[in-house]
Length: 270
Image 1 (tube, rainbow, N blue to C red):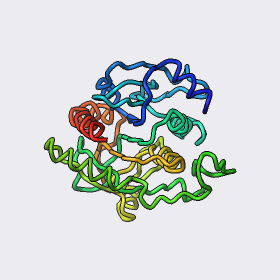
Image 2 (cartoon, helix red, strand yellow):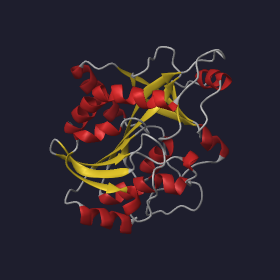
Image 3 (cartoon, rainbow, N blue to C red):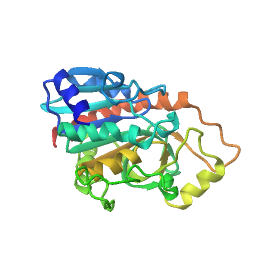
Image 4 (tube, one colour):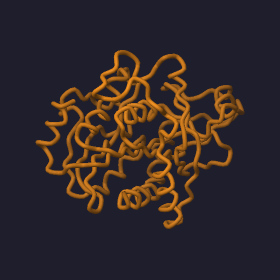
């Protein structure tokens, strides 16, 4: 971690305190970064490349307004064949750089029947289904210098940040839902039976990322805000139309028009 953080410091004069992770189809949000230094994941010691369409695999260090930020333009997933350590290592490095706040974004399937494609959902809580089978980034020996053995996830998505996000959304006239995000491993999309089950346990949106990053961020003492872009609406009806990753990317391009000003408004008030 220290080696990767030092490499990044040598490439940029900024000292970010806010980190942002951009999900599928949301890469254009990175265009809001001023005076950006762009570093490919592959250049950074111990980082691995992103292999998924819609994830550029760059780290941007720059400013939003007068706030120095670090932006992961793309993320890593378990379904790419990476370990949980590899997927979450960038979050450890962002913490080492001095980031104390993490904003995670993602593209997610809408489980809540009241959601439409392109809607934004503030993550109030999550359900870590892989964690039920012991797939957790904190599994194994704990380094007390990184965080405690047992991490309280009661307020994983910090309440004050959620209130701030709602205030900014209201001022901008953006409809911002709140709900529970469910993580599955992917890369296969959900079956109708799985959609029915996920609804029954309280899920509002489902995706294949985010939760490991949030767990590691909380382990390191970072405060977290999460926003899902609803890329497609899921149905338990077996005759519903199939899901296509290209639809996810297209929905992201449209949602960027609302997500970008929302993120700028939030960051300017942090």
